[in-house]
Length: 114
Length: 113
Image (cartoon, rainbow over all chains, first blue to last red; front, side):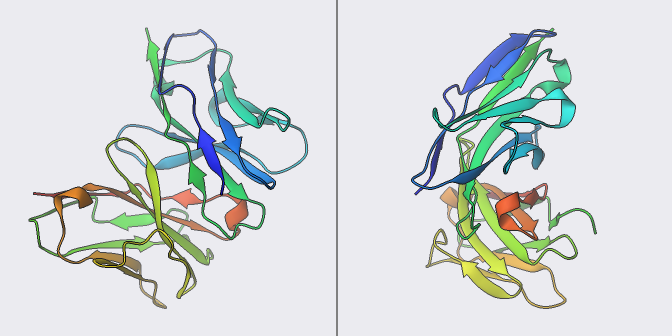
């Protein structure tokens, strides 16, 4: 079975500073990878996904992530954060077949401080 | 529509009462998924459908939870005889190609008192 580990439960960062949210996964077979964002009292919004091709994936709101197969990682980065980026961020994986459900990490709370 | 519509947004039930949640998937999406998000932010998969057929129910508590996706009706998740531990936000998602990701609704917050 697949699993996702988000190493940091909370990440405080000053406005305009860079940020990296870490995600590692475990799977015996190849997976697709996702980052979702959840703003307070809202649903999940897809930030970006890796299906194939370039290992550097660009998403919405200036976020990007890099797939590293050898390290089984898919870390999320943004070079300069805004107050509006304060939210919960979830890394998720799914088998290429899609026959089992999307599996989520426990989330990382990003708090941007003015 | 272009969004997954979940109703109601909030639901309060006394312990032992029934709760019914609804989800209208995006038009053209044949897969529907239900997840439960508890206080620690963990997403627990409950059940999925391909059209009106159960696709995967491995996460579904057998005793009090049931779900349906019938033609020309919103999908539903029903909890009979709610317990305090059922308090959570229930998310519905839909997809045309599950491996390429899901689109989530805004959730229904169930509070059992």
